[in-house]
Length: 228
Length: 235
Image 1 (cartoon, rainbow over the protein chains, first blue to last red):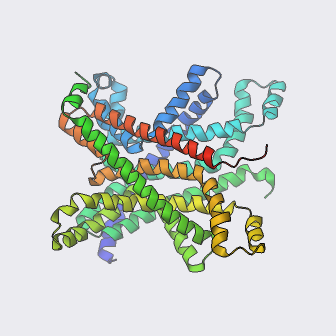
Image 2: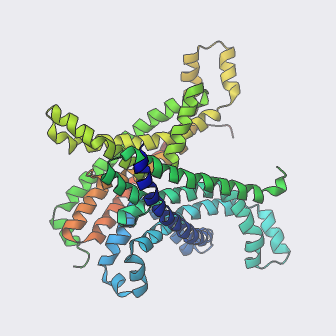
């Protein structure tokens, strides 16, 4: 690997790193909240609401993210309903915003399944005790159910965040220049395919390792009562 | 008509999409098979702690699982395309680079990815076989190969079915990524159709529905397999 290539490639890929991180953070924030809403809908007693959440997650988990991305970016713009709606058009018309939307909707489906598992694992007795203590449903959710569910679901959710990081690479197919987008460009410019791959891959690995470390730290923080 | 359903029907795009779907399933199945072979070999080596190989396998699985699939596909395609074209032309198969080559390299790329995930599934399945079973087989004096065939393999298969289901679902969805380097599979067929009829919405919607059908049908298949492999346990 020669130095000149390194000097050329590293700054370009670092420029992409910022975009990749931005995509990840915004998508994870949106996706987590949507996923939490969907998980609660899934557990709702209203059959219509529960089946909406079920079919949502079936559709989004059953189709590739790339197809969803193309459908939103190329497909939706064709419909006049979408073009006439200023808000939706604002989201769809830009590759970056569209990628965030697609990735967030996709991760929301996976997140809802993970959080549903966490919410279902809460012992009934704890919920009943909170009820008997006179907690309102909102307070009960905030103080009892959510903290217990998130502790249960955190390891699986950590894997999902890693998948989101990898999923942001698909944004390069709809003109967003993040790490993979720049890497592809560099590969065709310099023909140093393996070297560019090594640098870009190392960036992703570093992001993922840091994320795994953060999640482990949060996990041990949440499990501190176990005294390990 | 705004949606362009008519154009889809008239332009013969249905056949193109169905052919794409067949290629998607073929790439998925071949990659899954390659991945399962890699998974069983690497999983056994990792489980058995064969010293230098374990480190190599660890590097392989954590690299592939930490780097985006798209980047791996770009690496394998771009690094081999020139070489393969040169070799194929030298041997008088100039057309190979356009047709069969994309399929082969797609299977190599997706199989590599699927193999990394399969390795972890198989290793996990092997780790959950109670050590007592293997010790008992040894105590009975069964030879090593028969221990594997009669004790380890059947339990490994049964425990690994749900994990392999997840790997298969991920693999079939990963095949969509190969469309960006030009293999005429389902998403590529939809992309070409969308471009030439200027009705992207309906084409990508059809592609999404076909992918959904593939995953739902295979999910049902795996559910059946799980039931077949399930131990008729005491209640």
